[in-house]
Image 1 (cartoon, rainbow, N blue to C red):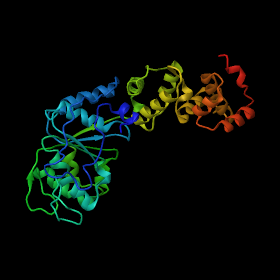
Image 2 (image 1 turned 90 degrees about the horizontal axis):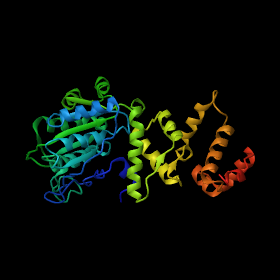
Image 3 (image 1 turned 45 degrees about the horizontal axis):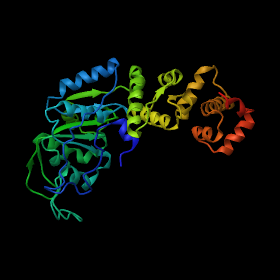
Image 4 (image 1 turned 120 degrees about the vertical axis):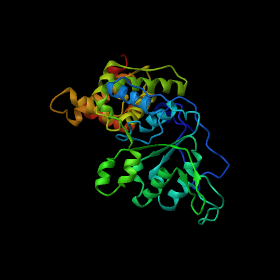
Length: 350
């Protein structure tokens, strides 16, 4: 089932999955190309530079490594490269390399023949042969064990795949894109990643800067997510108040675009109004913004008082709804009201 988060973060994308623990049976269930468009949203100079690079390299067959912090949208960039390439009408297969170890690595990537190991009850294609003619995206390529990197390198160099337990090699025509949030060059220096594989994969490197360095992209992304959410839920669109916009711009976004999408989903769901106020943002974002108002930092009671007052203002004094926004039980809210000497009645006629 498609979740709202999947929808707002990568509308139109096929869900990341596996070809099964045994790979794809030969001649059966071959993945079909996804011809939908994938949105890349932004207006910063850094973002425009990424788009220019994508347009320049998409038509080439060289390997590309996409680097950046977790949540910056590396797979979205990979999908855009595929969409702009002459392989757009072919398959795009994402592979999470963190799940591939030992025998499973060879079986899922390269396929196997029946009887090659316990449980191998039929011949399989594997990811590479299933992607023949299209694009394979090796996410978190840095997590492939060192002893298995040589087998991947051989496939890239020879353009052939030999299934596990087979003696016949099969030619393949696959565009290879990969991504990592680690420094592969440093891993080479530390003997954690093969130098020859690094140079094979890193012909072109696209580095995606973190969201905190692309401030001009924060609000366009936020509104893009909100628009997608309104379509997903079939509800009227919502907008951000000026204070909420400033809160988003001031936050440092350690989780990058993925964190922003999660924040917008929470805010959309919890906001009863069509105007989203800061209090329905995740607490770590709202509280951090409160800490910027005064210097030194507010006390915990002061921060709690502001949070409770804002929740009561939005809900017009309805304590059950305010407690939901704050993510606490009503009994705890009552204790806070008494401790902080907050009168609910003054908010009921706002």
